[in-house]
Amino acid sequence: MGDRRKGDRRAPEEGVIKIQKKNIWIYGLVIALLIFAIVLNIISWSAYFKSKSQYNTLVDHYYNGDTNNTRSTTETKKSVENNNYSCNISINGDKKSIKPGESIEYEVKISNINAGQGIRSFETYIDYDSNLFDCKVISNEEENWSKIGFLEGYLTMVKSDDVSTEDQVIAKIVFTAKSNVSAGSYKTSLNNIKFTSGDSQIFSIADNNINIKVD
Image 1 (cartoon, one colour):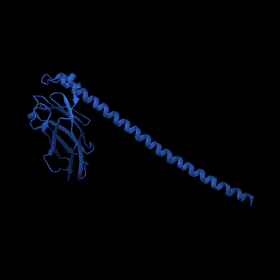
Image 2: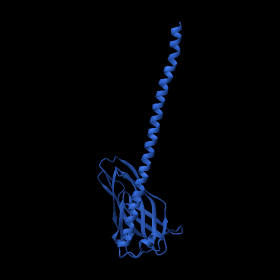
Image 3: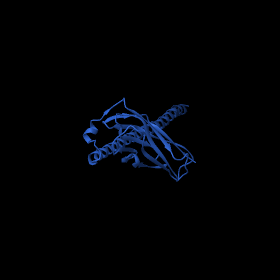
C-alpha cells in the first residue's frame, strides 16, 4: 500500500514537468518569431534609408552637373515646405486590363497647378509587387520632363526647361505582368508624392492608388 501511494504522488509531478517543458518550447518559439520580426523590420528600414540616401545623392549630382537647370544643390537644400501650394494628379492607363506577359502604360498628369511660376521636380515612391510585375518609367520629352532617378521604387522627374502652371504630363509608368501572375486586381500606388516649385518651395499631396487588372 505504501509503495502505491508513493507512486501516485510521483505521477502528477512528472505530468507537470512535461507540461512545463512544452510551455517553454512554445514561449521560446514565440520569442524567436518576435525577434525575427524585429530584425526584419530593422533591415527593411535600413534599406529604405539607404535607398533614400542614394536617391538624394543622385538628385544633387543632377542639379550640379546640368547646365540647363538653374537650381543648384545649395538651393535644393534650402527648399522649404509650403502648405499653400498645391496641384492635382491623375493617372490613366492605356488599357482596361492585361494578361500575363503584357504591359499597361499609365500617363501621369498634373493639373490645377498652384505653385508660383510652376513645378520644377516631382518625387514619389512607386509601391508595387516586384515579384508579379516589372516596372519602368518613360520620360516625357514633349514636356521636357526627364527621369533622373529610379532606385528601388524611388522616382525623381525633373523639368529641364522653364516651369509653367499649364496642365502637363510628367511621365509614363509601364507595368508588365510576369508569367506567374494570376487573374485579379492588384493595387499599386504612388506614395510620398512631393513637388518642388521653381522658387524652391516643396509641397506634398495625397497618395494615389492604381489598380492593375489581370485577366
